[in-house]
Amino acid sequence: MSAIDTVSTQAVGTWESLSAAARIVVLSVTVLLALAIYYFVGFDEGMTSVFGDTMVVHEWVHDARHFLGFACH
Image (cartoon, rainbow, N blue to C red; front, top):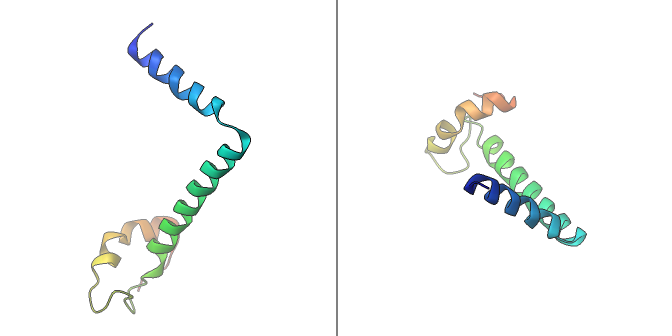
């Protein structure tokens, strides 16, 4: 058995060993983090900046905004 097989077996075993409640918690936290990131990317629209007079955040996430379907400017 190679090291990769061992790691993948351990990862599957870890997820399978979680209880249903623990899986719900993990999935809930993952969804909340994804929604928070989605909100952060979509919030600073460019016409008005939430973070003051700087457009740094908008420019950091500009391409992601277009990919996610947000209008810019």
